[in-house]
Image 1: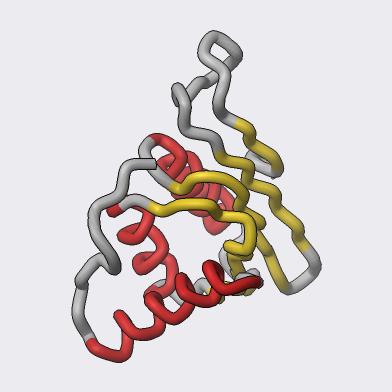
Image 2 (image 1 turned 180 degrees about the horizontal axis):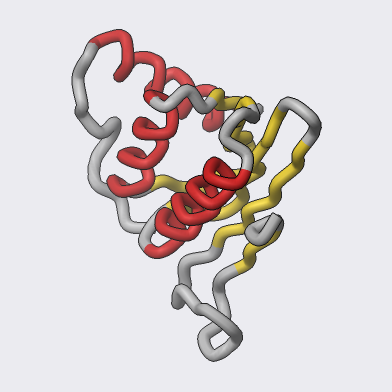
Length: 125
C-alpha cells in the first residue's frame, strides 16, 4: 500500500511536516486493514493519516478497518475530529496503556452522548 510507512519530520527530505512527526504502518489481511499510528497526531500529521485512510478505503472498500493508537503521544483538535469521523464511518480503534484507553473512552463517550465536543483543552503538539 502506498502509505504503508510514513515518517515525516525532517525539512527538505521528501514531503516534510516541520517538527510534527508521525509513523503510519499498515497491515492488510484478506478481510482487515489495520493502521498503526505512532507519534503526534496533530497539524499536518492529521492530513497524512486522512490521506492514507482515504486511499486505502478507495482501493479496498470491503475491508474492515482498524486503527491502533497505542503509540500516539498527543492529539490536537483536528486529530480528534478525524478520529471521530473515522469512528462514525465504522473504523474500530484499539490502544494499550492508560493514555490509549483514555482516548478510546473519549471516542466512545462522544458517540454515546451525541455531543461533538473535543475532549480536553486545545493542546499544542
